[in-house]
Amino acid sequence: MAAAQAPYLDTKQAAELTDISTVTLERWRGEGVGPPYVKLGRLVKYRRVDLDAFMEARILRSLNGTDCQSFVG
Image (tube, rainbow, N blue to C red):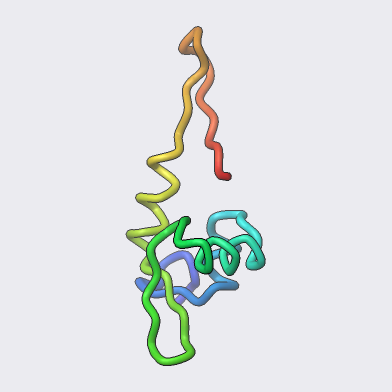
């Protein structure tokens, strides 16, 4: 199953899907910000649905309404 279709992704796969670096995802976990994740012992997994919702919540629109851009960070 491709990373983009898997319901649970590891940090590297989540980084590839969202174009957020693994270092940033790791830092955000330590700071308690960023997308929700699942911790299974030492394993960290991200649910695809949570990553999609995280990105959707950060869609910005230009003031004139003609452009739409995503912003993460």
